[in-house]
Image (cartoon, helix red, strand yellow):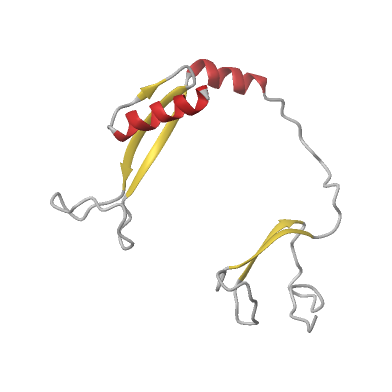
Length: 129
């Protein structure tokens, strides 16, 4: 409940254009984009413009120092998975219909997904199943 009230207060103050400084850090709003001239309107919701409204968070120095000093860095020399493993496959061409076709562009994410283009049996292939 307290977190909900905190978030409501932060949100309300940011909407009013105020900066909000907390023990966690500083919250503020900003705009981004390029303008062709001084008279161009700021239109963050127009599809053809690169204008954006953003909420920025800058951690307080104490929080940042505590987090950074508490991080343990470990170099992992071997990948435990020795085979290609796909975590996610997305249809970039038509994600709305859930169907796949040979002409679609697909996106795969995972580990060990490299292929050797010179090997004809490596890659992604369409099959009847």
